Amino acid sequence: LFFGAGAVLAATGERDMEHLGGLMRRMPLTAFTFLTGCMAISALPPLNGFVSEWLTFQAILLSPDVPSWGIKLIVPAVGAMLALSAALAAACFVKAFGVTFLGRARTPAALAAQDADPASLAAMFAFAALCLVAGIFPGFVIDGLAPVVQGLVGTRMPPQSVIASLSIIPVAESRSSYNGLLVFAFITISTLAVVEVIHRFASRAARRSPAWDCGFPDPSPATQYTADSFAQPIRRVFGEVVFLARERVDMPVPGDARPARLTVTLRDPLWDVIYAPVSGAVWFAAEKLSYLQFLTIRQFLSLVFAVLVGLLFVLMLVMLIWS
Image 1 (tube, rainbow, N blue to C red):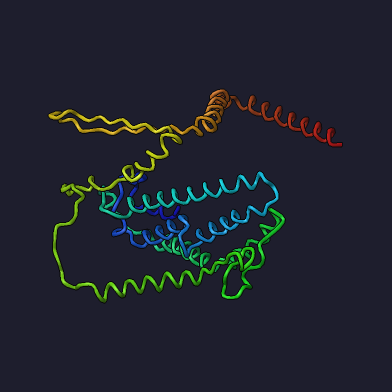
Image 2: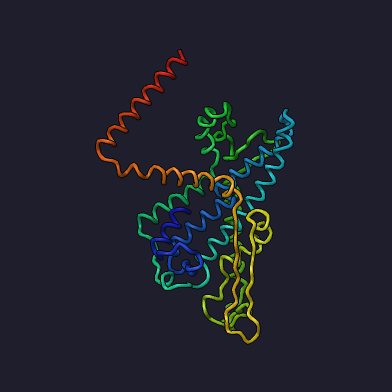
């Protein structure tokens, strides 16, 4: 996803999705790898994101066996939040891919975009292939990470790569199991079967009719679905509580030639509580210490010497306390 975003930025020079669109025609290979990343991070099978989320839900389903009542009460809430975050992630990346790669180009920069260079495409395809391989054969990845997990939490999952039919069994086969290869085969065969049925029974007669324009006959790309309009329903559900979102509509009266305007203001409470004080403190310290850049060489060397002496004093004090 990061490589795909970088390829789009390098090809168009645009960071705003509202200035893109239609890039699938101009950058088909980048679009394919970006779509693979979107599917993986949205936890869709048979990619690696689905396996990781499936294992997380398996751990949540085992929470009744935990002796601590506090964890028993917290884990279901965590599971609900995980499900909500998965749904929001899917909506987010549907918006990202749809607005960026589908539709028509909204700007000349998007219309003139070209696919990335071969080296960049090779890197993106390599990561896309890793997402697929890790989703089809997750047991090998789990066993490869087992020593790290053992060192961090003191335990690990049972060996998975030795299980027959390349399935993964987190606890016991009677509880649950997952076979990525079987899921991949099912999805592939089902897709090919649907394509074959459509091609076999669909009419080959060419029919021409006006394209559905959603009630907007203006052929301008500006009438397309935008990122803001896609996110508006979600913003109205969560934005007023989470981001204190406010919308202001300025609709001219009939006969007024002024354009209508929709103004949206967002305020992040976490930024106000956590990041803004830290940013303010850093800015305050930077302003107060800015005079250091105007010191003479003698003053600067004296300051460095004083700091070294202070550090040595602190080190000696710590050693005395420990001894």
